[in-house]
Each structure stands twice: as structure tokens, then as C-alpha cells.
Length: 200
Picture (cartoon, helix red, strand yellow):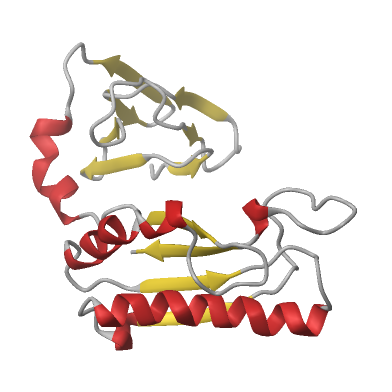
């Protein structure tokens, strides 16, 4: 009998076996000690009934017709699946850079983050970089659209000057549409005057 496996939360799952028995392994997220690794429900394909919920890291379920026997190891199963982990893409790395009012130059705090940003791009083979500019709500909407794109392009220029290939960089301006926090009545909010950079 074939099993239906429904993912309830993000998890890293291995499903192996033969025609009469399958094994499902739920691994913890790489490098974490938490037992929270998401959950997988094993369902009976004929009735849709849940046979078993596998919701602990380093658990292995033996699936047979109508049943699922779950065992949890007291040792991480991660070393056994090192090749799988090494083949997985690294998680995206986000950066938030902020600006003074009505300015496209990075403020002092964000200038200090530039070396770390450049290193993150260089350290990732085949990197893809998304640069999204934002503003607060001070000023006209059309002006803020232009300002947000100018800020994003300024950051792209900084990366290019540091030797980053511009063909891997995507630049977008979102104006005041996506505030990080609510803007005050006068519209001035430093946390919303930002460029978000995602290195993936």
C-alpha cells in the first residue's frame, strides 16, 4: 500500500524504502539543537485518516500498511546525512541599510555594514543579489518612488565598486508602499528609509 505524506510545517524529510515498507526520517534544521523541526502527517490514502504525526527532530518512522512505528534517536541523525545537507542551498542572508532624510547616501551605521555585505556576496558561489529600496511617507508618492530606486541603485553602485558582478544584482524601488514600521504623522521614520539586500 502506498502512503500519502502531508507536510504541515517546513521540515527536511527523507522517504526511503520498498513496495511493502517505507522509512520516513525527520531531520533537525542544520546546526540547531532545537527539537522543533516541523511536522509530517502520515495519512491512510484510502480514508484520509491520520495514522501518525511525526513531529520531533531525529525521528524515524517505519511505514507499513495501516501503521507507522516512530522511534526518536537520542543522537543527531545529521551526520548520517551529511551529503544531503552539503547539497542543500544556503539560507538567504538579509541586510538592512538605512539613510538620512531625503538622502541617497548610507548613514554612518550602514556604511559600517558594507564590508560584511560585500564579503557575504563574495563568499557565496553563484550568488544572486536582490536590492529593494524604500522610503518613509514624507514627500510626494512619485518622488518617493524615484528616491527609493535611487537608494537601491546607490547600494548596487557600492557593490560594483567593490568588484561585485552587476549581472547578479537586481534593483527595485518600492517607494513608501512597504513600511517596516508605521510612519508618524509627519512621515519621517528612519527605519523606513532603508534598502533591503538579500544575498542568496
